[in-house]
Image 1 (spheres, chains in turn red, blue):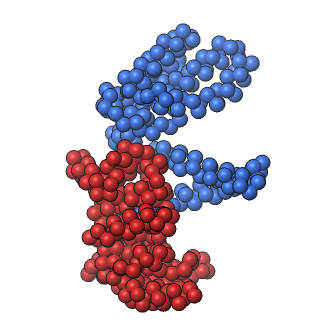
Image 2: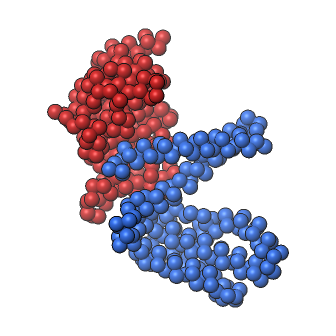
Image 3: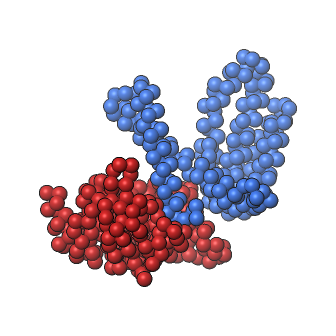
Length: 226
Length: 197
């Protein structure tokens, strides 16, 4: 079975219940998750590739239980974080993209070809040998996305990927999202990013309070936050 | 002092990382045991020639060596007082040459090449040491230098904005908290990229 499935999922941090009895089946190509700070949306997204293990229920990706098949699931699910700076592991742009492929055990020529193609696709080819920490915020987020996509995941999860970016760079990231063949799950406060998606899930106090096409779901969210 | 790779096609750039690590170890050892200032002067010529051979611009080479001068500004006078001017000068020149030699290596070698070299180097010890992890730790150490420098700069700016320049607590607490949080995020990012699988 392809797609993402949450079955009676709950999660507690100590006494605090951050996700509460969530059951969802996400098969649409582009899914948005919105909610106020502390609503549990990032925790839910992190469960998709096993960064957080639910304390109740189970999460499945393409029929695989994330808690039991974490390694296999992480090969299928790429994760883009809010702050690209903490996602970049290697000193230069090319090395960071290539780093993802180390676990794929490709031969050097294949790996280099994939890295070059990915750098080209994201307009990073001219910056390939530049120190990653000297890139602009937008370029860093593009690098983070490139480093995820070079591994050819079938699902991309992005946790507030445009929050730290200006409007122009946020638009560039959104344009790249449009071109992705992968299933895409985006957690965001920027509602315009989600308007063209196929489905939007609204979270409040750890629960799903609306789950619909973007327009009615986003209207429900706007009503919720007043 | 931890130079970032300076791309190039010089003979030094093209030399395999493992060979460069070997030469670096030998040269640093030689510099450490050279007995006289005259011999260290000759070694300085070799180090300058290596920068030339690697076609590293003087400005970039200077940037690698300059930070050690701050340490020497304190260490050399202390050594002078306790051991005389010749011992102080010898120690200072040795340290500058060792840092410069390390800079030649880091400026001409991508970290990924060092990672591969580590894997080869540690292969005989695979039963006790995971070469991938050692290489990754090395790469992360280099990556974290600019990350921490940026963090410290931001905290110092925030401290100045709040008029608390003199307070060590206003510096240490946010730096430690943010450094730990950054380490946590970096761990998540590594896990998300399947590094620990």
